[in-house]
Amino acid sequence: MDRKWLPLNALRAFEAAGNLLSFTAAANKLTVAQSAVSRHVIVLEQFLGVPLFERRPQQLVLTDAGKHLLPVVTKSFDRIDQALGEIIREKGTPKRVLKVFLPPTFAHQLAVPLLLDFRAEQPEITLDIVSAPSTNPNDGDADVAVAYKQPEVSNSILDLLWMVQTTVLCSPTLLERNPGVDIVTLVTKNDLLHVKLEGRPRHEFWEMFMRRAGHPEIKVNRGLVFDTAQLAVQYALSGEGLALVDPMLFRSEIAAGKLVQPFDILLDDGYGYYLATHPEDLNNEAVALFRSWLIRRFGGIKLIEV
Image 1 (tube, rainbow, N blue to C red):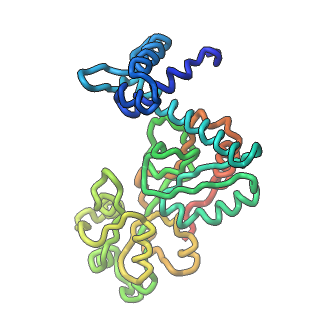
Image 2 (image 1 turned 60 degrees about the vertical axis):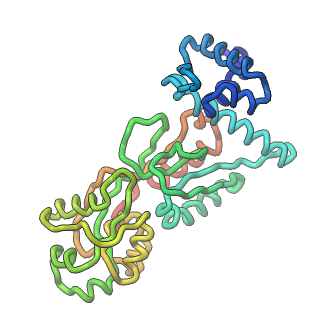
Image 3 (image 1 turned 120 degrees about the vertical axis):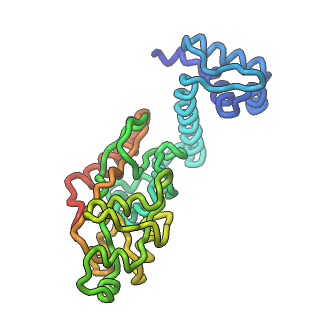
């Protein structure tokens, strides 16, 4: 499409109406007449050849086409706003800023050495790190995101960093109190530490692990439940409880002897860590540099060293 034909005013009107689901509210936001917003949206729909809204009594509802277009338009305007703001603040020589979303445990365990190395290679890129629990990399306005999720069809480009394999980790002092016991005895006599995952039963992964170990009859619906693997492992480091987590995230604690793996059993739980990038951002030099660097960093890595 020739960019000279892009209906920018119509896109602004659509974005406001799409976010507010009201032509009147969009008009108030843009300080124009309600009829102007409605007319701009109609022009955009005629340009595209499809409706973007269902006009219901006292209500606007986005169509599938509208739902597809809205986040792209919003992000594009956000990027323009950000770039203009940076030029103004930096008086014509803006810094390259990269907003990176990281899951909490990944951020706590791996981010510091990774980001130090990236900064050493690309010191001119300013990193804005955001850490919050989510399995959806499109939450928020990050340029790139590391997401803990199952493989899926997505509007984002997903580069696999590694597939998760969980196992039991605990403090060596716990094993000293339980010398020579088998898996059934250890699991039965000690607290189980569960990691909460939205949309999944809290005991599901321990049930999967015990089936993998050949003991599906063992009840695992007890113990403590944590929001993150980081918190579960912090509890285990106190000398209490068995954490079912990905040892890739706790390599330093394992190497230092603070955590041990009592059983040579690994569970493929179907989840992995992916780098998620919006397709329209691949031409952004900072995004491209970070993406290629992180893929190289994790490419061919030996995941389990216990």
